[in-house]
Image (cartoon, rainbow, N blue to C red):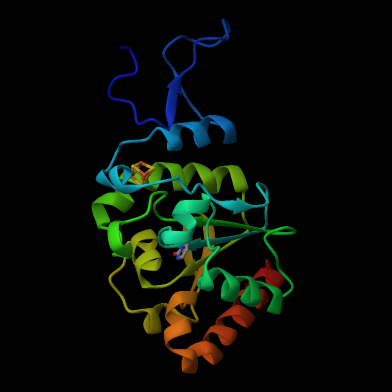
Length: 209
Ligand code: URA
Ligand code: SF4
């Protein structure tokens, strides 16, 4: 039981004789995916059908981070495949992006919260090492945070979406911008024009990087 106490994201390097034994090494994609599939680090594992790791290009300049899998995502094992996903894909296309070409999409938690409630800060904290490793593996130049829950959790802020929009924040050393969550926009279509401004802002920041 030498791995006890390590988050499932880490394993002990022992297969390569040249490495000192016992040194934790960060996981690659495949190991991380199976660590997520068997993860029980927070109570969200109890209600999940599938884990939702992420989707898109595993090396990408753009990383979009949503909140949590919903019902359809939980059944399909893919993020943003419901109604909000259709809108997200349209938002991406409006600035020349797509999950097939140049974007990776992830969520703050990889398992669906019961009844689609917001993920708790403790659940996002438990899942954060996976997201942090995804960010390292994807290597984005710009991160777009979708909605208040993701933005507040990742930026460690309790500010409102309206005060976080239109500014360049930092996620580690990677610039990050904030916009509305597509599910919110489906309920509040009046704010779509503001989301469009945010996407143009993100495009401008990326072009200037
Ligand atoms: N909403 C999210 O935040 N993420 C998804 O994957 C789907 C809906
Ligand atoms: Fe593990 Fe994240 Fe699922 Fe919680 S949400 S059980 S931390 S993979």
